[in-house]
Structure formats: C-alpha cells, structure tokens
Length: 143
Length: 362
Image (tube, rainbow over all chains, first blue to last red; front, top):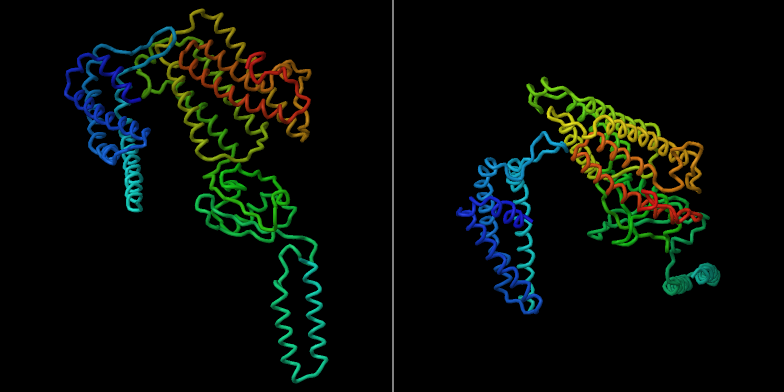
C-alpha cells in the first residue's frame, strides 16, 4: 500500500524528486526484499526450501526495512516544497461543493503516521523471525 | 449401579450382624476379614453425586480458561432451574475481577458464546458441566455509549458554529455575511442529536445490556470525527450556499423534518412493542402516516435516518456531508439486513415481499 502510494502519488507525480538519492535508497531496499521474498514463495510451493532463503528473508529485513523507510521518508520530505508551490492534488475553498483538500498537509500526516506504524511492523517481523527460525532449529535437531 | 449397591449395603449389615452373633473372640477377626473382603469387592462405597437422597440434583460447573485449558474455578451447588446468568454471578463471587457482563462462556473452545438466559438443565450432559471462559474485555452499557456518541457531535458542531478564533481566521469570520442556510443547518443538526439523546434516555429499551469498550471508542471516533469535518465546512467563512438557492434549501429542510418525525414515531412504536412484552408480532402500520412504511420495509427507522442525512446533504450542498451520508447508508444497510434476517427467522407469518431498508430495493 505504501509502495503504491510512494511510486505513483509521490515519485511519479512530483518529477523533480526523481533524481534524488533517497529514491535510489528505497528502490534498492524494495528490490532486494522482493527478490528474496518471491524466491521464498516459489521454493515453498516446490516444497524444496533452502535454509539460506528462509534465513535471508527473516534476517535481511533488519537492515533493509529501516533503509526502505528512510528512503521513503526522505523522498516525501524532498517532494514537499514542490507540492506547496504547484498546489498539486489540492482543492481550496470556496467551491460549489464546499470541500477542500490540501495535499501538502496530507503528506505531512503520512510522514507522521510512520512513527507509530514502523515500530509495530518491525517488532512484528522480529517476532515472526524468532518463531520461524527457532522452529526450524528444533526441527533440525529432531532430525 | 444403584441396585448393586443396595444389596451390598444390606448384605454388609447382615454379615456384620451374623458375624457378631455367632461367637465372639475368634469370629471377631473372621468377621472383620469377611467384612473387609466384602468392602473390597463391593467397589465404590461412596454413592455417585447424582444419586442423593434429597430430591434436587445439583450441578457442578467447571470453568476452564479457553486458551490455556487450565481450570479457573468450579462453581458448585448450582440448582438445575438456574440460568447461565446465575452461574456468572456465582463465578463473580469467587473471582471478583470478572463481573458477569464481561464473562463469555462457551461449550466448546471455538463455539458460540452462550446466552445468559440459557438454563443449566439444557446444557447438562452429566452432573459436571465444563465451560470455557473468555474475557470479553471492559464492558460499558449501551446507554452510556449512545449518550457519549450523541452529546459529542452536538457540542462539537456548536463549537464550530460560534466560529472559534482558533479554527477560523478571525478577520474573515467577522467580515463575512452568513447565509441563512448555515443557521438552518445548525438548527437541524442540533434537532437530530437532541432527538437521539432524548430517545436514548426516555424511549429506547436495550435488550443487549453491554458492549466492549472498544466499540464505544470506535463509534465515538467515527461520529465525532465526521461531525468536526462537516461542521468545519458548513460554518466556514468561505461557505458557498446551494446552487438552486432557497427552493433547494426549503425542500431539503422539509424532507429533513419529515424524516426526523418519522424516525421518532418508528422508535416510539418499536419501544412500545418491547414495553408491552408482546413480541410475537411485528409492528404494523397504525393510523399514524409515518408508520405506514412498516408495510413496505422492516427497518423504517434506518430508512428515515438515511433520508435525514441525504436531505441534510442536499440542504447544505457539502461534499463531506455526502461522504458521511454515504457511509451511514452502508452501515445502516448492513444493520438492516441483519435485523431483516432475524425477523424472517422469528416471525413465521412474515411476508417475504418486504425489503429490509429501502422499499422494493435492498
């Protein structure tokens, strides 16, 4: 969900942002994560999962996830002045339907929402890691 | 089993009597030996709990935790005529932190929660009943929920109406002329919520009793959030009045008042039915024209409610109100469908032609 938002509503819409380093940061983080994740699913379906892939999926996120989040936040932050200037995706009063939307404020709210959401997801993934990797160790020992 | 015991008991007594009657010193040991043999061969000396000489058979309810399967406590001496609510009260006495409305009891681990009115007799397979306990969380009564949900919007809208300096630009606020629609909208909004509050206090009879605290927080967040959003736009200095001017406003205000009156009469009719205790028939249309919707629809109170909100949208011509009305339509249609299904199950002579909320559709 956040990926769709970042790709279309931020990076594609605000063209000036596309040459920033933060874009490189989150693109690299996403691509590495996805390659590992989809190979994990594929091997799972073939019932032939190498331990390396499982380990990689549940360990590399520790570095990649914060990296991706940092890239995303920096990109949104870089896009802010351009949104303010061009009034992108914003409607202001007065208008016939008495409605207003400020994309600038919306982006700031999105950035703030990362603060509660990121720790929740991160700890959830750490918990999953503990569950899955310790389960495999037990399994290995019993074999 | 009963028959087996009786002769053994009397046999025992006879043997003992005979044993003592025969000859004293030698036969003491022999009688004791035969007595002990008899005791060992007789099996259970203690009679099973069901077979008491008193006429009432008491049940024991064992309460286990649904997740850990550990025993929390045993509620004993439960008379068979008691209901699950009595068991919950007794459970509350032993474990004071679980008050009855917070306790959810199931027959199997993933089964449905049993209702309070279920009698112990109907549950019992043997003399000991095992129930699984789940903590339903902090409970709050429906009256409290509705009162907070409705007082909030009332006060919040008025805050926006008086145009607090912290929300709106003060210069603009004092300068601009306010179209009468804005005053009318405030009046209508307040009427709606005052009516809801008065009905909660004096008309409604709640059958459920309690609901988890989370539901109240969610409901309050929804109502209060949306009210602040719509109040902001309607009372804004740069508010644009409706395109078709006074005619649009007049018609919409009239429709709003009709729907409010209708909603009120329907609620009164439903409450009267509950009050008189006779729930065996569905409320039928009376001389009051507002109740004639009962012939077409099974939940006309929801129909009138969405009618009110749609007319409010048209009256103020504000998109956020439209969004709110749309969400209310979705929510109320879900509730109406549920109630409709319940009525179909409950009332056998129910006409299937009726719709749940909107006549002929849905």
